[in-house]
Length: 187
Length: 385
Image (cartoon, rainbow over all chains, first blue to last red; front, side, top):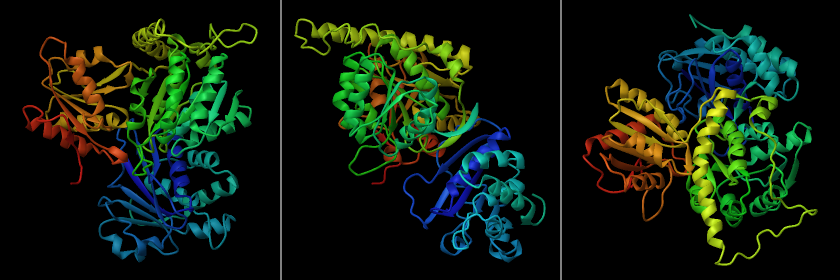
C-alpha cells in the first residue's frame, strides 16, 4: 500500500485531484481511498488531500501521518508550511514549478524530487487564468508517470468523470504533464 | 458497476437501487451530500421518487412517516443535532411500525460544537424500537440500505444505517453499485397490508388505553426478536445474489484466539490492521465486529467471547455515569450465562472525531494485557488531562 499527500490551497482543486487519482488507480485495478482533511476549508489557505492505493483491500481508516509521497500543487507552499512533515525517507516530492529538481537541494538529501510546470501546461490548454491556473488535472499526469499507480487511459476516464467542464482540455493537459515531468534516476 | 464514491453517495446509490419512492430532505453537515445527490437523481429522472424539501429534521421524519403510512418506500437522512430534533418522530416511526430506512452520519453532539464522528447521536436512540446497523466501509453502507428495506418491510420496524462522519461520509473508495434489475430480484416492491387509504378508512395513532398499549409494546419486542433471524437469513440471501456476506457480527481471526477485541464501525476496520500486527508478534488475538446494535447480538457475543481470557471493548461513545455503551451491553449479555466468562475491559476512544490509529488500538491491547482484570468500567484512551 502507498500513501500520498496532496498539498494545495483551498479552491485549487486538491480534493478533486485526489478523487480523480483514486478513480484512475481503481480503474487500473487498485483498491483506493481518497479523503480530504476532515472539517472546514478556507479559500487560499493550505489544505491537504490524501490517497491510499493498494493491491489488497484497504482496512485502515485513520488519517495519514507518514505519507510515502507528497504532491505540491502550489510552489509558494514550500515557504509557508513544512511540506516534508512526516514524509518517509526516499519518498517522491512532485512539485508544480517552473524550476528543475536540482533547484530543490534542500529536499534532495532525503527525498526524490520531480518537477512539472503544470501552470504553463494549464495556460497552454486554456484552463483557468494566469492568476488562477487550474493545475489539479495536469499534475496528475506527472503523478501517474512517477508513481506508476495508474495508466494514461485510466486517468483520462477518471478526469472525464470528475471534471465538469473542458474535459478534453483537462485530459490533454494531463497527457502533456505525463510527457514533460522532469526527474532524475529511476522511478 | 464499480465506481469510486464517497460514503454519502454510497447511501444515495443504495436509495436509488432500492427504488425508494419518497425522500424527505433537510441539510446538515456532514449528511447533506446524501440528499443533494438524491435531488440530482430525481431531477435527472434517474430515480422515480417524490423529493420533498422540508423545514426541519422533525418534519423530515414526519413526512417520511406520512409517505410510509400510505404505502410508499420512504427514506430520509440526518446527523447529530438533526437526529436529536427528530427524536419525537423517531419513536413515532417505530411505534407506528413503519419500515422507513434512515441514514445517520454519526457526528458528535454539541456543545462543544463539533462536526466529527462519534456514536452518541444514534445511541441516544437505543430504546426507540429502531434497528441500528454500524458500517465499516462504503460498500457496506450501500448494501445495508438495500438490506435495511428488505428486513424492515418484513418485521415492520424502521432501520437506521449509521456511517462515521468524514471517515466514511467524505471518504471515497471502490464501491460496486449493483444493477437495479439485480436488486429487484432481492428486494420486491413494498406492500403494506394495513395502510392509510381514503377508500378504506381506518384510525391510526388513536388513543391507546392501558387495556391495550402494553400489547403493542409486546409486539414490537416480538418483532425485534424476529428481526435477528431475518437479518441473518437476508444476509445469506444477499450473499447468494451479490457475493458479499453480512450478519449480525463479523469475526476476524478469532480462531484459536485467547483475547478478543470488540469494536464497531470504522474503528473495527482499522482494528484489523492492529490484529494482523499483534498476531505477527505471536499474540493470540482476534476481532469481533458488532455490525447490528439493535437487535443486540447476544447469541453471537456470548458464542465468540465465552471461554476467552479477555475481551477488550472499544467504545466511540459514552453513557455518562455508567460506561461505554457497547461495553455495558456486552457485560450485561453475560450476567446469566454459566461458564468461563472473559474479563471485559472497556476503553473509550475517538470521541468527537479524535483519530483512532492502529497504534492507539495496539496500546489499548497492551494495557489490557498487562492487567489481570479491569479496575474500573471506563478506561480512557488518549485523553489529555
